[in-house]
Length: 163
Image 1: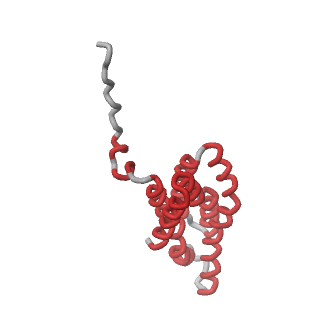
Image 2: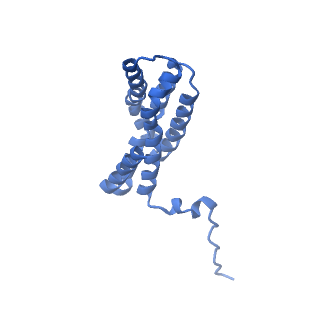
Image 3: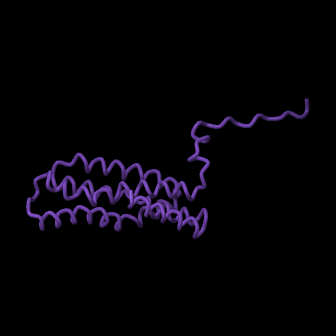
């Protein structure tokens, strides 16, 4: 026959999940919330890790070293975000989000295995250097849905801090 109807391609299992059918801005919101939980869990864990590693028993010094560990992340993040931005422009924001989320999770796992202050500090510096999820999600959210997308992504950061 001259007219044949082509069968539509079969859907892959992940394409039929609720998450895959969700609005992209809300997917980015979930990713940002997960990233925020990874990043900010150190706020509460740092003092216990400093005590557990036997760095100090003094309460004032405990706050100093905990602040040092938390700040190390944001210092390296501030220095490497321009590089991640260039990569996002060249390779795509979605790629940067995936790679950065994976590397940030691996860096936080390294923090859990640290046996010294300097090992923990290096793991925090490496984690911060790999953390470009929030900035890339905000940019992609704006690209996909304008200011509405950015607002949704930012709400994911707030929800992640609450959790």
